[in-house]
Image 1 (tube, one colour):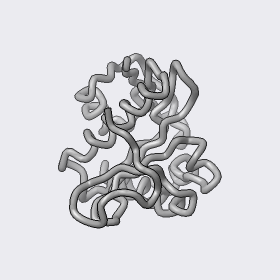
Image 2: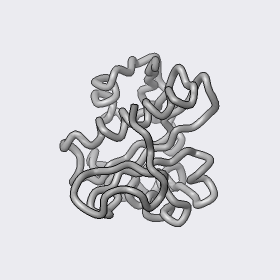
Image 3: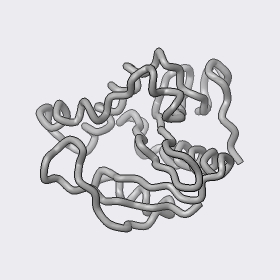
Image 4: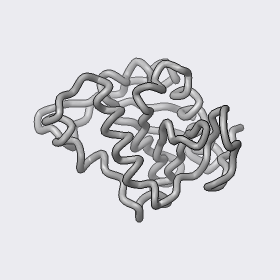
Length: 164
């Protein structure tokens, strides 16, 4: 089982590590989310429409159980684990575009799922970007339907569920 370190713990350089996010990182994490969303080829207008939904506020960092993955002191990705057991939500999961394809998404997702199990969750739900659906399916999630986008009227997202 992966255990999350406290803010500031972890190696100073080199290998990826996981830790709890700090409230003062909320702005940095929001910008990372927008860059990551842009990986799927969306234009500036689309990303601007998503900004509110992808904004993480300092007061939400702890309550949304935000975890960051960093390497050499640089934040490369983050997740939020929301809700209360037994069913939770992977509310946000984003990686720096340059970090995509290095296996770090698997590390971050697995750590978040392990933490969810430790906290007593039995199921995680996620409304995924269509481009990310294959990743979540590879992690064991099953598509269970669709959900309306919180940002773009008329847009539908794959809804997936992972039994822990």
